[in-house]
Image 1: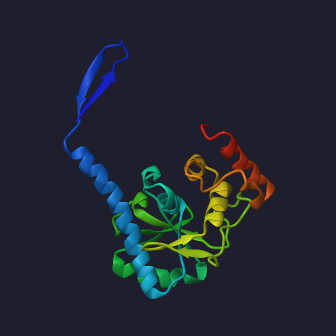
Image 2 (image 1 turned 90 degrees about the vertical axis):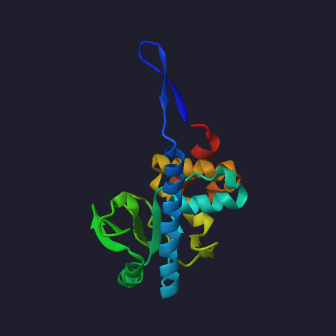
Image 3 (image 1 turned 45 degrees about the vertical axis):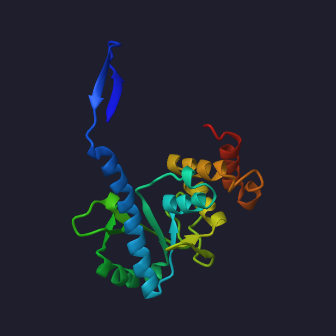
Length: 207
């Protein structure tokens, strides 16, 4: 693969990228999907309530409308009841996952030597993800059974994204809006702060 670049002095150059670059990109995406599938299969087999949230949940919803609009993510986020955490650990251990707590975040590393980016991050249902958040994470009362795993219902997922409202959350909301899954009829579904945030996204999709 050939990549063109420009030096600070205005001259141009050519950078050769190894043939394995594309292959590594594909493997990285597949690794995340395989991790999600493995975890969901283990939780399903153990009968533990859960839902996929975060970027993978957004990708699943977007794919229902336009698969070409799906944005890949390295994050695997699972909504669990705190009371089920020990049972989840027992269910996930045979699948290779190791429970850890880092910086106050509960996660299941994909192996004892794995890094935090190679993990499943746990969000506890009914609890605030961060103390400063205006809303707690939703309960697991409304879950959609999707292909291979359970998803949080879209309205609740959007609420989580509006509550966190980091840059990547805003991008995920733009993705949902771009395929028509959320529109200007949606802000009334949420409290004033979240409603205003959603209007910002809908009114300025290019921002």
